[in-house]
Structure formats: structure tokens, C-alpha cells
Image (cartoon, rainbow, N blue to C red; front, side, top):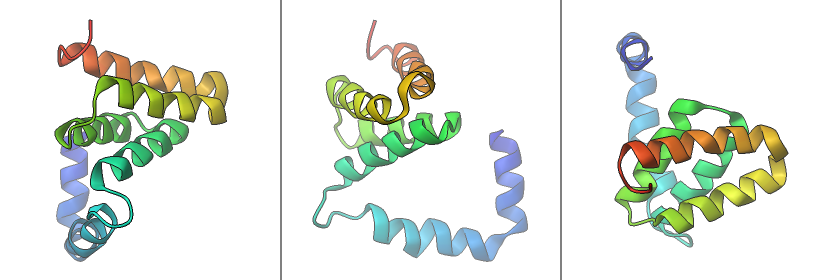
Length: 105
């Protein structure tokens, strides 16, 4: 998947420059909400969307910004409250990732 993602980025350099430059900077810079909170919000959206790569990416970025497993799972609980068992099935991706990284048992 990531190799194909790199291919699409190479084919659309103008979009990459905009999306991964000013757009991401504007969205994920501390403002009224801090960056960690924004990444946790993005995780909830990724769970709802069912995007495995997005879930992993947002979990990773939230961890880098200091999110704890408790904060990550609380975020997931909000997504589950909105999306039910379908969202819960996506939260298993989060749990698997955190286990793989030896953050949880």
C-alpha cells in the first residue's frame, strides 16, 4: 500500500506540495486545540471511515505527540459510540498496532 501511495505522490507533485505543506500545517498546528487533540480527533474519524492505514498513521502521530494508551482508547470509545460494532472492529487495528509496538500487552 505504501509503495502505491508513493507512486501516486510522484504522479501528483502539485497536490502533494499543497496537501502535505500548507494544508497539513494549517490543520495540525496548535491553535484553539493542541496538535495532540487534533490527531486524536483524526483517529476517531479514521476509525469511522474504516481506513486501516489512516488509523495506524493517526495513532502513531498521536503517540509521538504524547498521547497515552488511555487517551487513545478513550478516543476510540467515542468513535464506537457513534459507529457501533463496525467502528469497534476498526479499533482492533489500534489495539493490534499498540501491541505490535509493545505499548500495551
